[in-house]
Amino acid sequence: MPQEKSNISDSVILHKDKSGRIHITLENVTLRQPQDGTTLVDSFNIALQKGDHFILTGPSGSGKSQLIRAIRGLIDQGSGSITIPEEVSILCLSQKVDLPRTSLKDILSDGKEFSEEEIDQALQDVKHDKLRQHLPINQTRSDHICALAEKYIARAIQHWENKILVCGQNDTNLLATEIKSYIQNNLQNFFPETLAVHFTEKTKKEISTRIESAFKNEIVNQRKLAYGTTSNSSRFSTAPQKLATQISKYILQGVAMDLEDAQIDGSTLSRQLSGGEQQRLMFAKILLQKPDILIMDESTSALDRTSGKALYEQIIKALPDTIIWSVAHDTNLIECHNIHGDLDGDSKKISVQKLPGLTLFS
Image 1 (tube, rainbow, N blue to C red):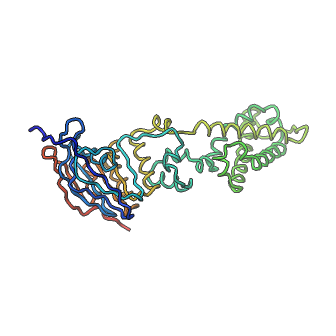
Image 2: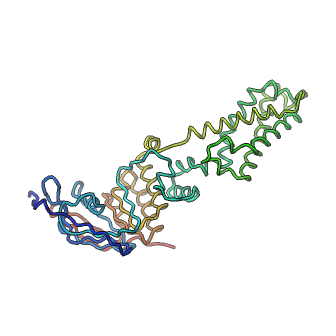
């Protein structure tokens, strides 16, 4: 049966409530196709309050996403009224993640102030360890810096072999001590400010001590390979501060270069992350920003059903007062919500059913 066509001059009225009350109210909302006036949604009424989690299901192309666009004020073809609060935080996520060409921190924070620790925790909560390693707070941890330094320690000893491996243990220990001192005093100077601020005195001491130890061990290993012994008798002709400075700079410049190569922005993420990983990143954004109203249009479509449901459960437990408006084909997500609307493709009516919702365990 062809769909009924109505006067396309009608429009949905969008009200902005200034009371500060968190709610979404739709009164007798009918939506129509802008092109020909075909009805998409017919006479829909719903009132969502703080803590309500609403999911809308229905056939593809039936108008579910258009209803979200009407709530956002992007379309108004139809009739009825929509009321949303004006001065509350609203976060809208779509099926396709559009990552801007900016830093990971900016992608997640949208200009709001969050600490590196808060961002790291949000990524950890959604099990996105692949991206955690790109945060400055994690890039500057001693384990990460020392792991990167290992190859440059080995290369430095090979490069200055004729000055290092021929010397006795006491002299090479002295060289290692000088390297430790230089790195501890100059570490932050080799990195951009975004990284340098994370090098505390404790971190610098730990990194320099571990590099000193790794340097000593690598000398023993390379000397044994080159000469079949772990110790020689030659001595440095002069105090080794100059050589220690050269080696320290070589190591730190190499580590800094590796960290710079590992920097990412939105365009890099789009290439490196799968669709599911990008959607998982958006759940970290939700946990970080804690919106009053969250609107999600097929925001787990690229994830497997188990992962998608687990992420939904996590945000509902973390944000129990947030209004959630979901559009999804995955019926597995219905039980995460306390209100279910189903859009009938023929009548264009939305039937609404109250559900128990997700049980929040303490």
